[in-house]
Image (cartoon, rainbow, N blue to C red; front, side):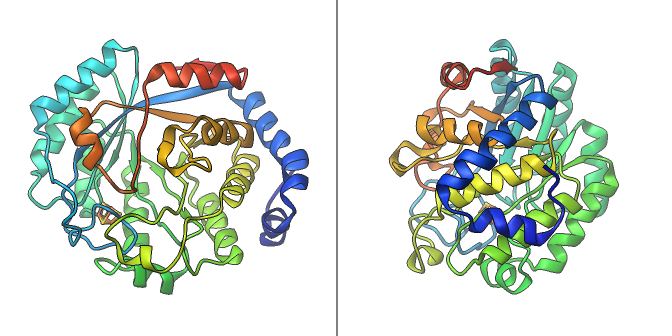
Length: 325
Ligand code: SF4
């Protein structure tokens, strides 16, 4: 099934749920299995600072949110947590932070170098930097940089991300690509005011950017954020449809499988949500390395709750897939 046009994408986004579940979902899953040894992938995840100077209207970690306790983990401790992950058998690590102006860049380079020496495939999400800094991150050992465009609708982006702007974000994405790091990028699905046409444009942009990982997720209203007053959570079926379309368009990329189900309290480890994501063509899970007290405050969304490797093996068995650490 060759999807190349906006009309084809919109056809799937608009089709009845059952037609999608019976026709498109199995095809997407089959495309993944045939191109990737039918293996679920897993990364250690470490939110090393929840301090952020920005004010994205949808994010629980925005600077203006006084409802969470802030923390910052030093390089030495990050390296120790990385060793724990390595001993668990994990070989990918995803390091993520708010745009924390007091986290020294040299310290980031130091923990990246140490984790690179251990042998990890390193993904980093730390916000917008200067062009030369992306090159330094690449030289230190970052394999993949996560820079979400969040929404390809320029006016929407500029309203919801007042600390930057769309042109600046796209310039940063271009610079990440020029540095030689892989680019992980994607959108938020179903935020208030988004249309299916917007989602179709987002998908086309992910394809155009030749992404290595689509860190897509449905919109969750996060406590203490301005956007939470404007509307409810994003539609789960639309999110699954997007996963399947991305899989059919890009058979080898990673797509986040840690997706929510109907019960938002079960967070990103909801068995139903995770299983549906695998059936839709997603493949990538995370094992949170943060101590529990900090994990609670890494609150880009409420109830981010994630479970460990055992959960990943259970889901892989349910979906009749192997696990690749
Ligand atoms: S989305 Fe990222 S940059 Fe925006 S407020 Fe949240 S942590 Fe900061």
